[in-house]
Image 1: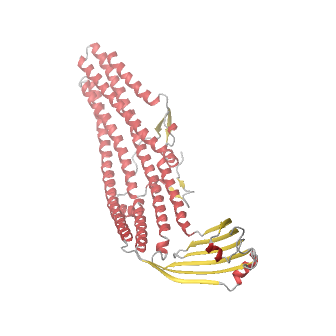
Image 2: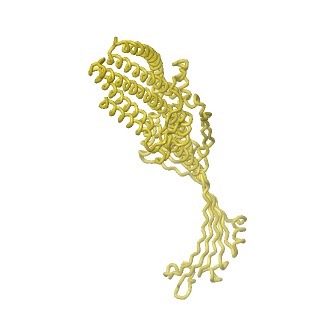
Image 3: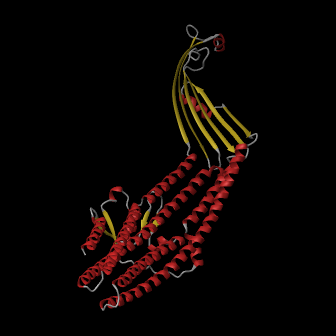
Length: 519
């Protein structure tokens, strides 16, 4: 008897030490697990950060239309020795040793920018104070020092390449579409995290309750073993019956170890989704709250589910944004492949006086002005780059359209697969329950027969094994049914709505996840 009892006791102690040594057993309800995933899941946080970055990229694209203001202040000082030509060109005016000296102070301000139609504009204002050897001579200069100011305007309007909002807003529209795609990907990560929590939680519930089933099997087999040992000592049973009962105990202990390992693996999967810091992983063992029960099965309507999926699935909506983005790129590439034809116009005035104020007055009111108006045409000889870019973008647009068709096929197959799994697992629950009821009745009959000596202990063990296996199959079928219902909700794109979770956001900087569940 000791030969069989001690190994079994060692196995049970090993199982409980695996669950309890240096760990805190922490009950966790399903809503709490979902909440922790929404708050801590790293994949969700990473994708939210990507959405935030893409929101900033939209403003980067708008920055191309932000006018740029430039201010300069320069002090110049130089002394140069004049050659004969320079000496004559300045009227023979120079300092000692034919040295030409300059001490100038220059101020400048300009603003330039671009409009949504592609118009490039620039405004510049200059004010210079000129002090040199030439204007120091009263015979050669009207003013000493000279104050020179000027005001200039320049406008360049594309008529073909770079004309219109299709070309100039392309980067903004591409960035906006990319932002929308990353937002949908963030929401998809939320859905995936919630679905993973649900699946792992149902698996953990199955593992936790299956451990109880296997423990009950070990305890029942151990009691039968003790009874067989006593009966062998009294001469009512053969040693074979004792050995068979001992084998049954060992087999059930092995199944208990397997069930424990399955439970721990479901723990690790759940922790991966709901925990954020590595320090929070060790020393905690989560235990599910509540009994594993089958979820209600909705009315299975394939056509309605597929229609809902096309309306609600985010991967399908993403393909629409991708097509929109590639269409923007195609129109931009088509514009860039055209020749450049620009109208260029300039206008400027200037003034020269003895003070800054007088020079500015002459600049704005004086008679001196100059303007130009012309057309600038630039045609690439082969336009190889433009044509190649257009061909590349055309293929990318085709790829986006093909991906949309691929997602359409995936959606239909996802719904069909989920419906098939729900129906299969529904039938499994019914048949496993029927099997368990029959196995329970068979065990009751076997126990009565064994008590009156009409059945061997081996046959009793066999009937009990069938009962415990039926209990495991029932638990597994319920967990599988619940998992398949989660997959069906995912396939329809309605998982968050069914759980009462909604995403509220105005910008990526202030999103909010709202769920109604409480402990």
